[in-house]
Amino acid sequence: MSPSNGLRHSLDKIAFLSSGTPEAEKALGRLRKAYGDVAPEEADVVVALGGDGLMLQTLHRFMGAYKPIYGMNRGSVGFLMNEYHEAGLRERIGAAHASLIHPLIMRATTVDGRTEIARAINEVSLLRQSYQAAKMRISIDGVERLGELVADGVLVATPAGSTAYNLSANGPILPLDAPLMALTPISAFRPRRWRGALLPDKATVIIEILEADKRPVAAVADHFETRDVARVEIAMDHGAGLVLLHDPGHSLDERILREQFGY
Image (cartoon, rainbow, N blue to C red; front, side, top):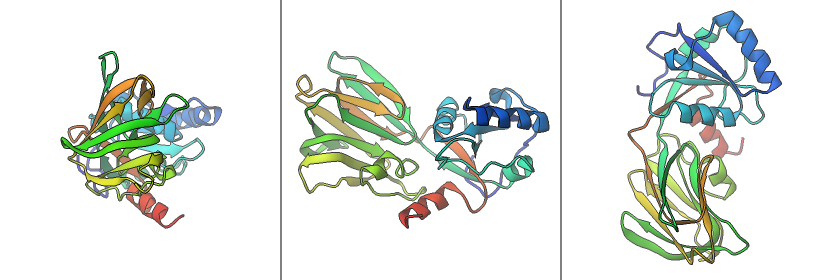
């Protein structure tokens, strides 16, 4: 499925998922009564009721299935969610803009030789585990680009995730359809003037941990954490697609554009 200004398939089968908060659970009961409910695996579209945390969990659950996910905010921030309205839900979903995004895939090798693989919709972050700053070597497509980065950490963000942790670390906001990834340091000490890089989304980033025993580092792909890593390989997984639905005028690319102008 490619992004479009309207969905071209049946919306008869809707599955509702709740974050479990009292507000979300009340909405779940009312919506099930009004529209019915089926198992998520059998649904034409999944409606997630909660905040951005639930949306990320739902997207991970259906990674690569190309099942449309329509979120309604019953949480706090709700950057990835639509406004909550109960009336005319099928019509809203039918008119929604579909954004196709791809996750990052992380292959982390620990100091004891284990390999952990995980995917991230927002970012892959490497973070120091102790009071000492991390020391890292960064290579892009097999070519060393930074021999030593001394920092609290470093992250690689997707366009969809560029307004999350990446933005808090003073990384660039990327348009949703930009074929790019953001490589952003976290509290860099050396080199002091390095502010990161924009990379093609077909690049492979390899981060090696220097003095890994003395300066331990954890790798985090969204909510999945691997501690005591020695080497982390990060690339965009173009084979896994995720479909987010947003109301007209409030698409994810529109929200990202607004963030660039501070509102």
